[in-house]
Length: 364
Image (tube, rainbow, N blue to C red; front, side):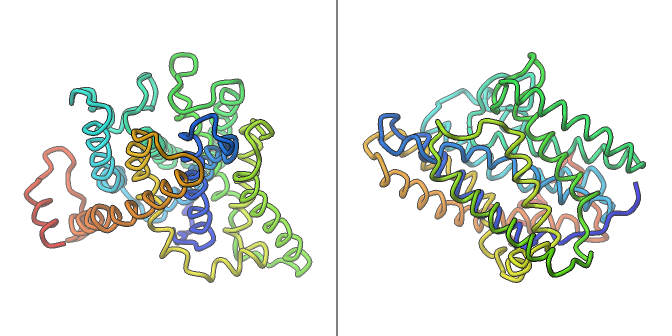
């Protein structure tokens, strides 16, 4: 495939979408764990669909590997070093204080294999299913991007994958721990569809340098404001009984806002891309994972209901996420960067030298 223009993975408008997404998903999970008889239980129950936007964003940035010419070993190692430590920490915590499972039953989680098909067990760290799916789906599309050189053929194959995934999902198999037709895990299907759409957007709908007439900027601005307001209002105030249950509708909404924001189509996206949202958005990953801890503790107590529960859930998740970012994610990133030093050669996964890891960790 022809060379792809590199994009800064820290687009501020996209970082804003990540921030909004994490907050909406936190609120969704907080309301989900509330007592069903609570009067506010029915609200904020559609936030789970926002995961699709995270898949689309991941797919949009994935073709950067073609520009950087990253080997599969380096690509996989980078993601493993980022994902495994925090997943390991949270999984051990949940098992000690809640699940009490024998260690051998934790292997699918440690190997990032849970919720990726053939394995029907519910993932121990429930919120981690997204990370497991994202890792393997990105590995799949990495191979596809590197093996299929013709852009049109690649687009055709990915379009079929997206279509097939959405057809299965929209016919009653939506979720993340269900194996449709005994093989295709629904979480993986969501990942295949979302990441695939993100890649298609990148290859065919990304052109920020295209000059647009002023009237187009005004029209696009109105669309950006409408969609952003729609997302904020719809995912928080619309009761679940009145919510749209069609996954394709959400995919269209999320794809549209991504295309508008990355291309600076309207004045709103132009303004947002000049504001440093990365300083907050960088915590999104850790906050998403660390919400597991307040979910376990607050669910065990079962003495806090209503808005107090939601407020504590959000506060604890954010504080733990920020702490985990600095205590786990940053040191792991430094380990990865130092291991890639000396000409950029990656460490071999098999036969990994843990003495080097310890040395790098002490230096950090």
